[in-house]
Length: 93
Image (cartoon, rainbow, N blue to C red; front, side):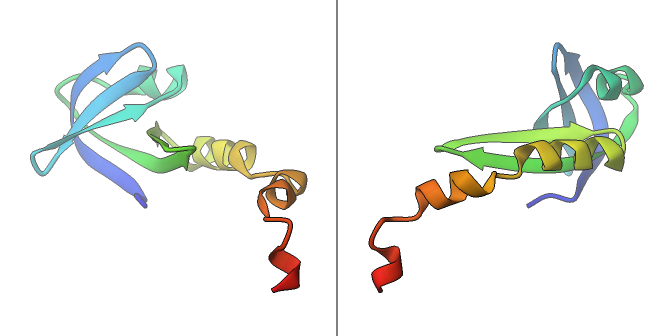
């Protein structure tokens, strides 16, 4: 898991930015609010969330913690989704 990523903004594109930190370029999916706060060639620090689901991974970047927590709330699984994933014979073990 990542708490934040700090480094030089290498690229800004639609819905994403690339930040280079210690020689590694991190592609982060970002909101328009976050993207508008970034400047290419300048240092930035984005709060980060690595989301994995059904074999896919996405690294999200946020300019502030409020945005990060907003996404975290939307990604929380609902109880009925969790119960659906539990094997039928789980309770017999």
